[in-house]
Image 1 (tube, rainbow, N blue to C red):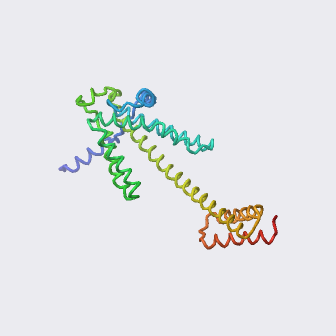
Image 2 (image 1 turned 90 degrees about the vertical axis):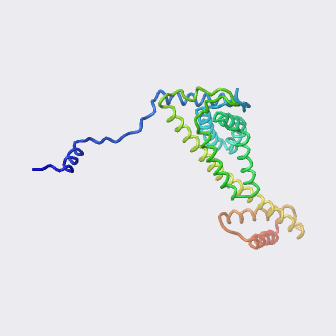
Length: 277
């Protein structure tokens, strides 16, 4: 009886124990040390390196700084909401804006790039967004991707114009690149979360500001029309109070200018008829 090759191959496949290859995990001691280093990089970034735009910054220093910065922003945002100080996190962001730019400049130097050129282009794209509008978001996003790629590059070992390479970029051995990738992912994730949160908040604040401006204009018109009708200040205030109740009843509804004018006239007439002194 002949044994065919395909039968032999079939038997071999049955005998082979195929194990799923798992990605190696980061050693706990290295991860703990990396978190400690990240906070250390951050503290040094906002103290002794606050205005240091020259020199280099390793991948670990850069992503560690922004990871801790993002975490603190979110914590301060939650604390600000609890303490009714909604701008608390943004005060923090303004206070740490300079060291954030400085560490970005040092990271670009570490890959032998001129920080002034690359950050200057980014600033120009942001300014264009203010002038042009939403269409400028496309070049901003594209340039952000370019920057992230450069900020993730390995240290350029040549001294060049920016001094000697930073040896602290390779301190965790085989776990080093995995730790860098984890820091980068978390930093980008937190940044995206912050931007989304900021967009929602600023949109809400913008709506509130528009409402307040409209409300003030309505109250001013009631006062103007009331004085023309020889109403007393007490009557005008009563009409304004009545109009405030009407505005509350309109919350979430689409209201036309004619509706507002009619409601103003109705409020004034109602107060006049009740003869409020």
